[in-house]
Length: 195
Image 1 (cartoon, rainbow, N blue to C red):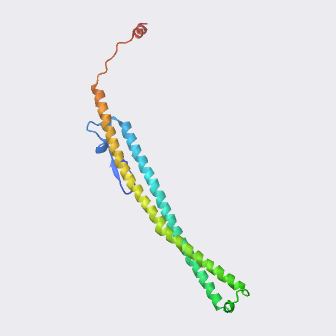
Image 2 (cartoon, rainbow, N blue to C red; image 1 turned 135 degrees about the vertical axis):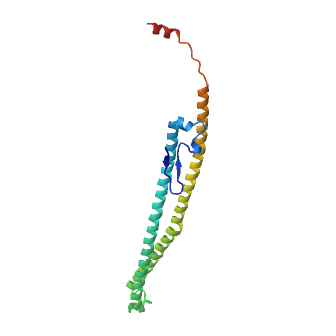
Image 3 (cartoon, one colour; image 1 turned 120 degrees about the vertical axis):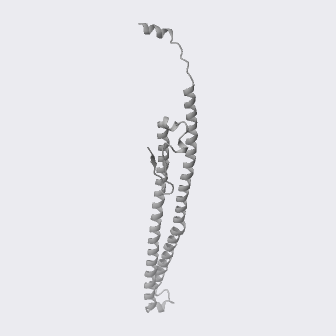
């Protein structure tokens, strides 16, 4: 009977009682079902942890990708807004008297508001760039690291399980070949049996 070990898409395998890393020549794998169960459970736990981490990283990447799109849309909208009102002010009569800044303070306020809006637009464009070129790229690298560590952990785990089963098999073989001398019953036990 094969035990399917569902791993992340990157590395799928099938574990069975005949799997070379978990099967000794004398059949320790079959003689010790509790060891087999523990080993399979350990691999399932490792797999579940890796899958949950990968899913979390994928969700984070999607979140920042969408957030970057929103920041870019917002940046463009702010730039259009500032440009539209800048052109209105340039065409107005009050713009021509801008040299006298103390008399035309509402025009100066408009220029400050528009300047601030353009700065916000640039800031949101910068956030888009940071999310797309730094955060998402780094999350992708971390995902690759998780996959690489999963493969390495699995490889080391199989080696350790193979060594464990080899030692278990040796102990089992020695215990079968060792005759345990039976001690004669104690005198007080014999008396109890007679009563």
